[in-house]
Image 1: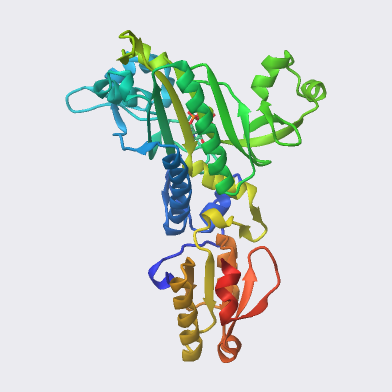
Image 2: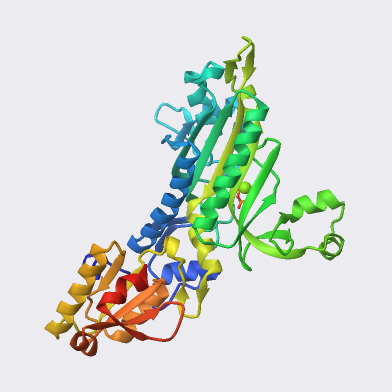
Length: 417
Ligand code: ATP
Ligand code: MG
């Protein structure tokens, strides 16, 4: 990719309303732009990161036999009335009516729609278990949207749902998802933890949250040195203790801050009972299906990764979700044909070897270019000027260090992999 065909939109200053570092850096590096409160457009650089996160999630879910689907995000009120959440959910549910005066809402979550989908096609234990997921836009009319995409009104969530003939099958599947989630966060290369959680608005009986550890997180966790532990709300109940410092003393654990990036629930028969989603068992009994649901905040992960990995200069993407592996910076390529041709050769070499790169062919000075790619957080920078093209080498500067080194053409690809 060349910058002349892949526009970047870095800024010098950021709007004062950006309170947390990830929000500031996402605007400054040209990843997102605000449309209105809690609603953001994703520019090319940001969009690439979303796609990387989605692909990592997709890969692990496919491995455990979960199939991708797509459901409409405008949902009819009737389904929410059946589950009784039309009255329970509160003002976060954005409601409206169509030209025929029928009531609808924008989907904040999809238990009703998926239960309706499955009950219409599934009637026997022989068809179970079923595991389905989608990656799609959700809408929650948050009372105070804040921190950019971290708590937005419109955001991307992966939501998966499982259907079973027994509690035992649900219990086993729940563990499978937990493992898949661990793999997802390992593959994302983020420091994370799993804690026991409260199941809130979604309901059900058992649930776990996945948190990215970051000092700026909104959630209070109590963790041991291996990062195992629980949500503070749960700890208060478990140890019958309201005071934080007493809790720390009692448990010997540390108070850490987390950003909730995933939440899995055993729903049991909560929705199937209300919505009459039944199957016939092996011994010809009619029972309500057992359900699990499993969410991951895709766009929130992008912000959480930045909260965890940044410095003075900007974002420091882990390799897993960096928008590009390498930025190629040419110095005065528009004036010096030898520099341009050497840069082009390196560009083609990287492409041939499958190293995702962005070739900065703008008419801008070296300082500005380095600043931009450090801000955007590309893990590797290659610099090509007069000296490099004459010596048939490149200068290499990793995002993680201030030092530059010269490397020969033969060694480049190995260095970047
Ligand atoms: P929170 O406690 O942060 O409000 P939640 O418990 O209501 O989140 P879930 O219903 O568990 O959220 O949704 C699954 C995931 O979707 C969350 O773990 C989070 O990563 C993401 N998510 C939820 N609300 C938002 C939001 N307003 N903006 C961005 N991501 C969100
Ligand atoms: Mg949650």
